[in-house]
View 1: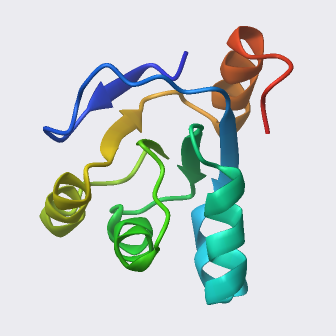
View 2: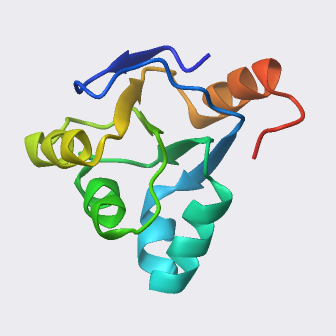
Length: 120
């Protein structure tokens, strides 16, 4: 659905029950610590899709310090993957998948087709 490539070694058979899509810049700059925690709490057992990602570092650092973590994170078309973000998510046991969908709209439409009632 996400036309993705796994980029770290935390892959395993993971059951997920939906997805949440968020603009990474807005989530990290606009949400305070408690709001980000609440966002992640409603995202348990869901794939968290971050859009507008440059290198993956900001979402990785935010997730590292969060008490609740998703099992799978999808980064939409980062310009490059920061080795630190891969390292941090590996240590936290979070699978990172880089989506190669051309646009955010294509990515969201594809997710809605496979999980129409559970999506964002």
